[in-house]
Length: 437
Image 1: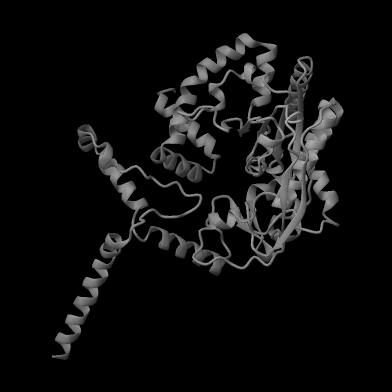
Image 2: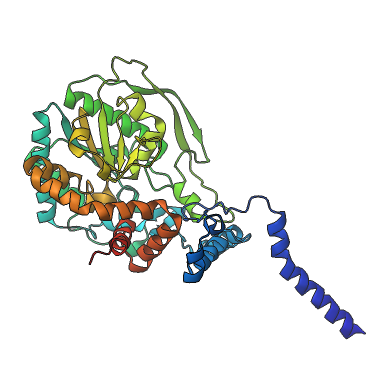
């Protein structure tokens, strides 16, 4: 009798365990996993079903991928898995990021950059800077000022919290080569990295947060104010000022000051133990001053000032070209437009100032070929237009990959497996789709 009772109890428990996911899936209204930094396929293939997809097996693959992304326990299990690795081994389940001392998080690439491990050599850097000088001088004749901004990286600024295994004698860094070369050639340069280092001993508030990848919101405000002042001197103009009369000091991050923490997708976030400052930013409201259109070509460091409203309120609505690819704000109401789809000459010359701002970890790819493209455009336009027409097909397929979650997921996996940048993985897949050997 006891055996029967035990068996029956086991059967009931097993049945409930098997039934529970289905019941939860039926009762849960929001089945989308709320995870940061993970590509989720939100296109149900049932809504786009075609006969040939069934017989080729494509439908089954699409459906499996969709179901995997919308499994009712997807978010819970991802967070629990990430929590285990973080708590037990101090490991971040965020591609390319590592944990340092005192809970500081870093992009590993920025640590390598701080110690010169990604140094690309003097020859490549000087060649790029010589082309930048030609572009700067050419645009100056048209009344347009070009300047370079070297932004600080967390790896170099927060060296004290980097794990000792990364530290070694520094021989040469890309930053040092860029600064020395720029000064020798006479390029227009704003060195924000040196500015932040000067502020470090006396700053009342952190310029880099523990759980953020970028400069803190407070550091961002100081950087923007400095950039505005530099443009005014360079271009002999008067831009609307940025200012603040009040600063909130809190121990819980706002804005992008915990962007990596969000991407860690933990079940329970750690305490931050850091007082962070948040100026209540105001802009001078003077339409007669807001007439100097500034084009910014930058990495993700410029996203913060975009959210702040700098482009609209100080740069006369000037665009932000993210990695010389994505356009913010998007110039079309019907489709996403990328830089390669624009008339480069026309768009360059519709601005009065062009700023190239890159942080230390992205100096190996400074400008993302903007300098090379602009140089060829103004020194050999025939060769430039022939080349971009040849590259158009690959660019079109690359754009498709970025816009389709299923294709983007494959490229992201390839990037991780081959340990190459995502853009490189996308290009490889685009070449394959285009049928180019």
